[in-house]
Image (cartoon, rainbow, N blue to C red; front, top):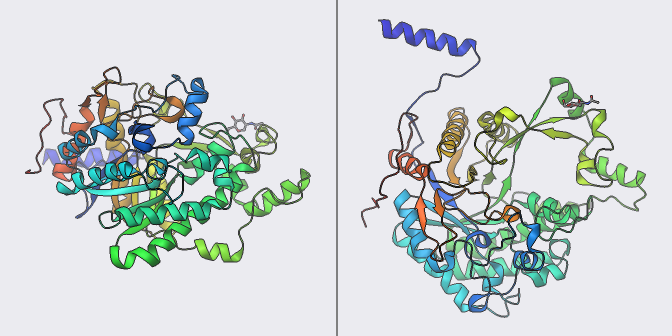
Length: 487
Ligand SMILES: *[C@@H]1O[C@H](CO)[C@@H](O)[C@H](O)[C@H]1NC(C)=O
């Protein structure tokens, strides 16, 4: 009786304070898939071994090392090129259903084109894939995770419309080489980041900083290239190989900081009209936002079997007088005409990356369900950065709150089928080098053997995968990792 009253009171208190009552021991749906992700340049190392040619990250970090926070590069990184067996062992320790990794274009095609196939590179990915399949771990392969062959960059990279052909030829070769065993293909990882950060700004290679122009040229070509790979797979390979192919977007949540400003922003004109008008006023002969023809729109429409979603954090967004004129002209930010900020109270941990806003994840998933007719979603990245150390309680908090938010969306009907942590292990965090650590496993970069050690969060994730339950009462401890897959 008294227990019943306490429950009732706490429910009442929760409702009155606008908090939902957290259910504990929530189960994940039947058949839900769990994985972990990495990307080629961030973990492989072996940057010039066995016939691999230079990519844009090799080129940039070697020519201008100290644009990277710790002046480092991915020459060795986690050395996964040599340590793939240990990597698969870690997947087995965690009990992963799948592992998401990317293929290095210049490792397989040193000329960038299919005239030469580097057998050593093919062997590496075959070994990795076959080792995973031995233990029923499904490969999920990203074709492009930011390491463009340098030669293609010299030809303009994603700003050259011919890249639709180059990328299509590369994709076809990957389907031919690995598609008998790979059933999940991701065409492009985070097209917005590739184009905005690399072509419209200096935040990623190749740092072109062609503001308000480069990112739009890149954006058009990368979407068409994605669609090319999709059609090639759909027509030439799907009938015999039977997998799925999709694109992964990084979508953050943008919450209007007041209702009034939200209404103001929603009334604004369509983006292509707006950029066309701004371009004309700025003296350009045509819109900087390059247009897609009706045929191109049709070519792209429907070219993702599911919605691949990377998500990390949220922003508050506003538009008022202070926004106008505060950005470079022209630029993507000036075209957008909004201001963004985050609240200090969202921060946990030491890294600026680590704002924790689970309700933003929930709102994003809800909006995708409502606006896009409830597509099937794979969460292809979600994760938390620390500055290292095995006792990563903040990461545990982040993962639990975000998984809880995801379960809320699922309970309301969102069709989310898979969840991927970023990352299986520490890796090269682009412009931040090795200063930001996202791994469930810590890597000791001072040791040439690059030993991997499970963090506390690895034990939490293992328990979630074992029990298929989100249990906030489970207290993970760092003990000895075991492999429980029966092999
Ligand atoms: C614009 O909005 C931001 C965010 O709410 C606020 O900090 C700033 O003071 C506002 N500026 C003006 C001129 O209203």
